[in-house]
Image (cartoon, rainbow, N blue to C red; front, side, top):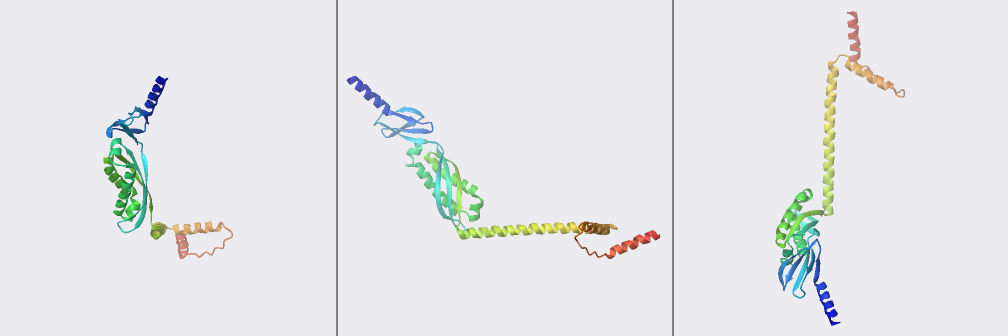
Length: 250
């Protein structure tokens, strides 16, 4: 009976000492308080009391950088938020070099984002968001490298402006659209005037062309019987008849 009890205790001791490390994890093993090695995925045996370990998730993490109020270089107050994507490359560093790497990465991203926004103008912030995000990524990645982290990407989600500034930008955009519309309309009128000038010149150079064009216009108007047309005969037509009469007499 006593043998079975001892065997049961040994089995319980063995099972309690087994630790499972999943495929997306790494285990940082400490023996009597000192770092020993990295535990790879699978079942691992640990000596109770003498050994302990820390799980580290090595998957890509998305850290939501909350709204940060900042003032741009041209003194405009804005609110900016972002998303930071990173992963753990060196599990021992992530555990030993920093107390909480998730919290530390988020805090450092917040301060870096405020500093970068303060160095840019509002126009640069609105038109070059990808470049600003890339600068934030480079700075955060360089700092967190000592913590065993690698920053994959940083994305600026929203840039929130004061209501007065939004109205100003909307008016500016509307004025720009009206300006473009006026320019396009003027270019169209200029092209039409040039074409009319060429057509008038061609009609003036061709004998009888103007009269034929006039007759064609009269024919087009006569197709609708509901219209009353008052036609004034130009002197050029009378002169053309006189020219035809002289040619017949000859």
